[in-house]
Length: 102
Image (cartoon, rainbow, N blue to C red; front, side, top):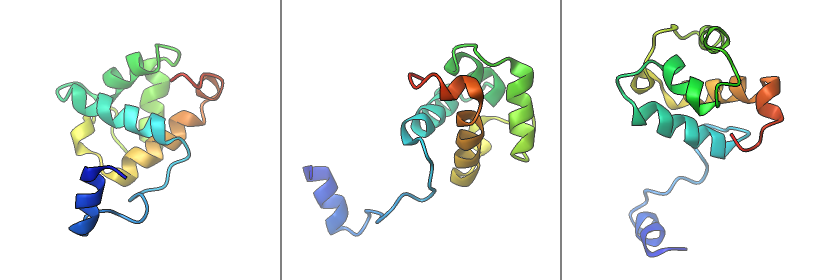
């Protein structure tokens, strides 16, 4: 345990488990970092290069809509739960399943 983790634990700031469960934690964090790295862009425009253009923008927009989000939503508007749901949807796409590098 690092010094920082130890101090956070001393302060009671460590969570016993993640706030939202996701199957692919690494992809979840990449998605969140990408969403906040380009705050003025819509999620479709942020996700398109993140997925290495393997999924077209219409499919990405449909995935957002299936998560009850608008096609023009920006990353800073999503909750942890919405990011988790979107991560699961995108992970379930066939091209993502075969590309663990994403």
